[in-house]
Length: 423
Image (cartoon, rainbow, N blue to C red; front, side):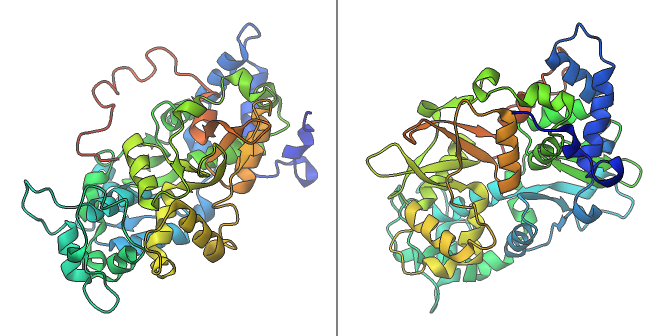
């Protein structure tokens, strides 16, 4: 069922939002493309003709940045309060006239924080000396009325998987956690400092970085003042697409069924998943190992999903650790139940299993992703069994394709991720 084009228009015939205005700019380019081009080629040409400077700025024109000497605890609060997954880290020692390459040391994200937490929960290697970043160092800092004597735990190979509910209370109340600064976990940053676009680069380049090259956000820098002007996220692109419903270029693509576009790309047998009685840290370990942003929680003895855990959900273990204190082991089910009861008003769809069917259209999916502010949808059959998963990146990757030689040899030897990146 088509959506009237007037959806993109506000009162007086003007675009209803900055994203809709951008969509109409693409529409103007669409109308003048050569008729012999395929719809995909036309979209590529349109997005190549729009500079990233045209993308609407961050809310209130404010790019959230975190200083390198900020404590990890404060960084988690900043990311949580602003409901963002990552933020650029400003080097406090950089001179005022530094270039952007010298001003920033990287981007801190929940994925990197998960890596750091798992590193604390794992036993020190018997072949290497105990270091201040090991779990035994944390034990010394965390002992006390509220602390957990980690030295008394069994440091077996399954330590991280069997961590009790009080581990996070011990971690977050320790001086070790409070004194760890963002720059101390810089080994988990992906680039040096990160990939960025200039305002004159094209929309197509930005879309390719967010899809084929697996970036979750793309900073846009001003070379003149060496600062970030905007940060374009996968979620922001999906919101822009939702605002373009009704425009001809969007409808020609958006009305296709998911199966017509080759979605889901990840089928049921390849989905990384955890069962409801497994420890929640196992979910985060799997996300780190498999490099995925979320996992479904499956009912015991079945194939139906009862919830979803994402990398960003680690914030709930750090900002409200007391709600897990009485759990002998925080299972995936315990975690979902606790988050649902504690954070439902702020994050109403957090632990909810959002699903779709293969014969839904990509427009249906985009509107649902945007309205619920989520990053993945699970594809199910008529009985509710998992058939696949679709992420924001999957959708963007079906919107454009990379022309031959588009980035030259820029990415040769850069991908996969650097060795010092543990995410």
